[in-house]
Amino acid sequence: MGLSGALETLCGKAYGARLYRKLGLYLQASLIMSGAASALIAALWCFTEPLLLLLRQDPGVSRAAAVFVRAQIPGLFAFAFLQCLLRYLQAQSVVLPLVACSVAPFALHVLLAHLLVNVLGLGLAGASAAVSATLWLSCLMLLAYVLLSEKFSETWRGFSADAFKYVLPTVKLATPSAIMVWSVFLLPVTYSIVFLVQCGCVHDWETTFWLQLRAMGVRAPGAHRRFATESHR
Image (cartoon, rainbow, N blue to C red; front, side, top):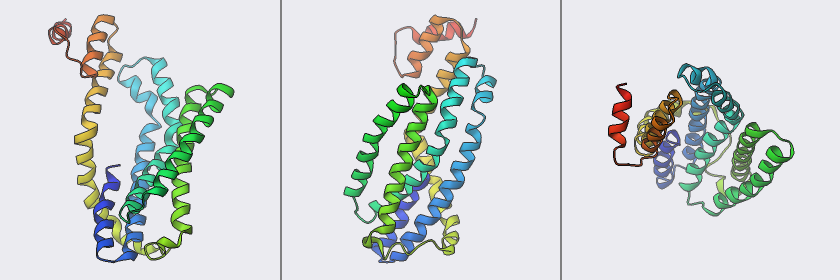
């Protein structure tokens, strides 16, 4: 999400200056960059189970998390590409198609999740696969709209090798955007994840309870004192 934020600036600037062809080039450059970043994250996700075991998490939980995450890898790429398309369309004040391409896949997601989880009995893998399929459907619907609509004849002129010239400038602008998004939105989540990992390392239920309260941001009287006491034991 943060990496695609560069398109808000680049596409908005190009559209305002009537450099319409650049919108398509910026989009392609962002797709290349997002695809590369997603590939790196996907490689990390492939080692979810050994990494969690290294952090002393429960083997059953680690195995279940790995099953869910691996089925989510295709959706990772779809989500990254979808964010790029959203920025590209928003820069041109296109709104209604975005809503349609979100509502329709969501309706299908409910049915698909029921089919994979309850009917076929795929469990966590089925739930994760349903999310991936929904994201790809939404992404492909928006891509088809861009490719087939005459509205984008000036901003989208097909795939071009010129897009590679804009990859590095896009990365330079996207990196601060990604850091900002992480610090504002994901840093609290990261903080909670750290405490949840600590919960997985503690086998005393009372200490785990206080850790979970802290992970959720709940301030309970005596919680800090209790955690400090347990930490020194």
